Amino acid sequence: MPVAVYILGLAVFALGTSEFMLSGLLPPIADDMDVSIPRAGLLISAFAIGMVIGAPLLAVATLRLPRRTTLITLITVFGLGQVAGALAPTYEILFASRVVSAFACAGFWAVGAAVAIAMVPVNQRARAMAVMIGGLSIANVLGVPAGAFLGDNFGWRSAFWAVGAASAIALVGVLTLIPRIPLPAEKPRLKRELTIYRDRQVWLSIAVTALAAGGVFCAFSYLSPLLTDVAGLDEGWVPTVLGLFGLGALIGTAIGGRVADAHLFGVLLSGIAASTVFLVTLALFAGTAAVAIALSFLLGVSAFYTAPALNARMFNVAGAAPTLAGATTTAAFNLGNTGGPWLGGTVIDLDLGYASTAWAGAAMTAVAIIAVNASLRLHRRTPSRVVTASAGGTSDTSGTSGTSDTSDTATPAAPSAAAAPPP
Image 1 (tube, rainbow, N blue to C red):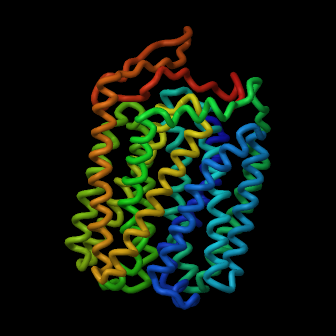
Image 2: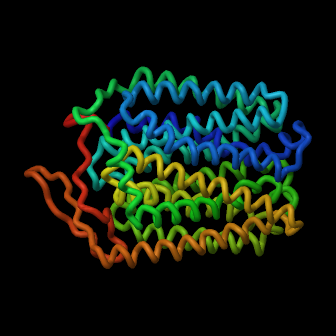
Image 3: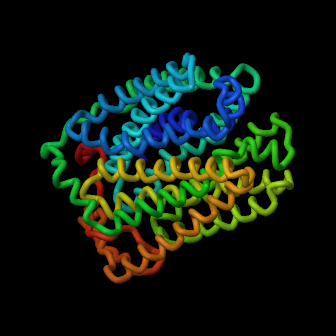
């Protein structure tokens, strides 16, 4: 795996910490800004909405710009957005800072994912994405609990300052360790890349990703008040439980990244089904502290076990447009991260209680399973032929089995960093 892929994973650590740390900061933010917890939860949706809109817009805007310069600019803007959030005097300004940060985060994800995918062969795409998602997992293990700890002891603004500092470190890494990537000889054409949206499998992948992510984060976004108000845990437990979720995410990413390239549909079906079971169990036994803690860990495993497969799936069915494929995956994840917290806040406002967020999340993941099965049936009717690089030239592998899939269209192996520059 190229070193640059690991550097991208380190940068994603800062991005992911900012995206998810509000799950442990909602109560103090709500108190300081004099808003309700569901309204404070909209800050999570604001970030996700910015990601949904920003990913395709920035992917298109930067399509013909140098990749390294684009990454440097985006991580800089993201860091400044964290500073603006730390200094925000009102809820509205904090909301705006989240949207700006999300735009930069979305662009970095889209461009960074395209660069990572281009650096590895087609049969290692899930592993490359697992490295980047690993940065997100570590953010959940260390960054999110650290943000909750800082919020409890030094005020919620200190968490934003910490992410700003982490962004500066990430900027140094990108500046010093990611090489200059020249533009390709043939400039990318937007019209050609947009043709991916004619494919039903692309839209099914968007639906699966959004529903699978949204179901988990419908409950995760309100995990802090659920743990304290329903499970009866002291606030000091919240960073520890968030850390357990992150540890589960790290384990799930490692396993899913290694298995998904060979058994993509199997990973999707088993992982999303497991999330559904865990959410239902959480809804039923949220009042038991030990069960709530254990399920927080297991949800981290199941959610991030599927993440490399969800990313790789989009690049497989939209391989002709790698930049837009990365942007579309980012947007799809954050459609879920928008809809999930919104649905969770809605059921809370209906006085159904914090545990009801798990029921709502389970409904979303159940629909995701239906969408995966629809995609699998369509794939079986049109079996794939994947061309991968080999020592003597090329070799063909068929994606005709039910759970062993790598692509839906004939896709050339992604060029290595030495052979050709990423798009």
